[in-house]
Image 1: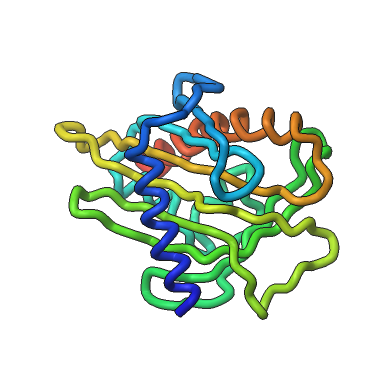
Image 2 (image 1 turned 30 degrees about the vertical axis):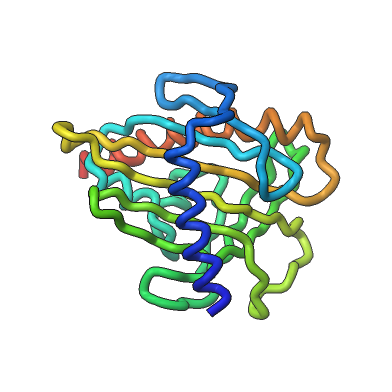
Length: 211
């Protein structure tokens, strides 16, 4: 029940991030995305918001994003090396482990994250994945990986009225990477990483359309 409560709470939290415009500061723009940040209320770091439009229906975009073992995300997202299911709580709530590769020219060592994830569908046709860190007895910290902690984060795919083959994608990252990383490394990593995320997502959706 505790896992379910955390999952439902993070769903509400992300919906709040999507609708609350206060305090965001733009830190990166590209053809694919506008990345903004503001101080996190969850931990001593920042929450980052990405906003972009991807060519593809919400169903196709979601196919590339959905958090499932053997899904497409490990194939196109350079920040996801492995993704495994630890426990299925309900049909729409699961506990998963994500492994990330080293980053920032090796300055950031491989990480692993254990999260409860809620998949939520809205009346307007939007679909979201919502995640936050949990402790799970089946996955204690492991040698070779720094255990990181995701605070409420995820992606929301929103249909665009009159544009059935375009999808507005919101993404939220607020991650404690753990370890003794300089703040400057973390602050420069996320905006660039999110811009790459949108670029690679667009390519993945396009290749899916061409199948």
